[in-house]
Image (cartoon, rainbow, N blue to C red):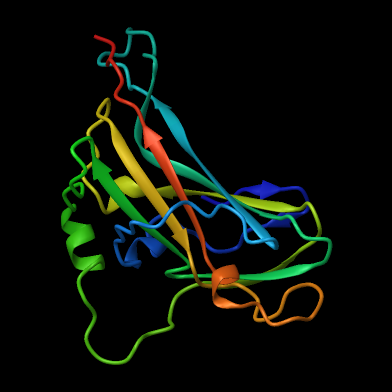
Length: 191
């Protein structure tokens, strides 16, 4: 899903394209900002579809979609590159076990043979100070998400960062990764 925020549009789709990223289960603490960019993640609720045409829409339920926002929190322009694998996801059930993969997820997340491939959509864009871009990721494409169940979603962004900060200094490895954990509480499904 492509969405405009401010004057910047994110040209790369993250839905199915970025599901090719490796599943992660890092024990590291969250690091939502690195002084240049800030990463925010929230769940997107989808209305439960009515069972019959005459039934009213149900309460919103989480079906595996998250919204990812990257914001420039520095005082200078930051160039960010978004490509396949920029964001990596880990989806854990309430017991801390990885959510089962869908058939597509099994194929997409299988270890790759041979040299790395850099094919797929790539976007490079400049974020002005305070500017942000937002996109949606459909985790249910690669993971079996059961609406109403509790999940922990870990999102890591470790690619696409500039090699130098807005002051021209080299961006060292700790500044070239963002991590955020999102807790999805269990919901009571409407009947």
